[in-house]
Length: 179
Image (cartoon, rainbow, N blue to C red; front, side, top):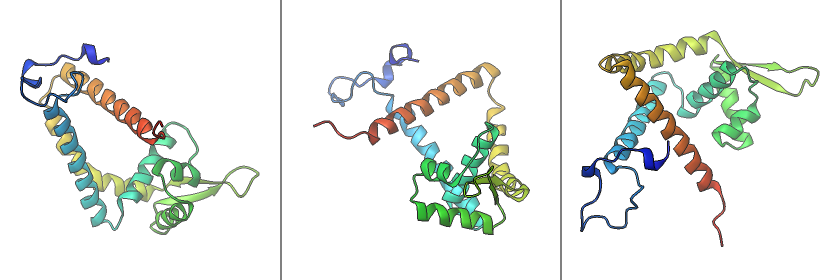
């Protein structure tokens, strides 16, 4: 969706004398603040749920990466985790060791090259993940029940666009500054 197709209520535009440095195409500040609040609260939930189970946020993020790749039929290696979570090799090794020791991940050798290791979640990881995140899923489901299928479709499209915009901004932020 292009910026020109996003409806902008007049109330969200700065009036004369207000924030004249803000570009016309900038997102409505209140909506951006709500997205930031959601992100912060989701992070707090992950910290709280993980803390009750002696798991770090990085551990839970690693399991989410493994689950997403596995669902897409992709092989997950420590290198995939290192790249996706932006970890050093030693930090990745420590992460995989923690997940293995806690019974959440098993290492399996791949093919004829016995040096290559694939990571797979265990049934314990799925059980623990369900126990940690089911309360959040239940509350979100209850909140979503108040919306029509059409409204949920619109919000789904909006959130997909927000994820894509965030990914694009992250890519831009990783590029070297022009001279």
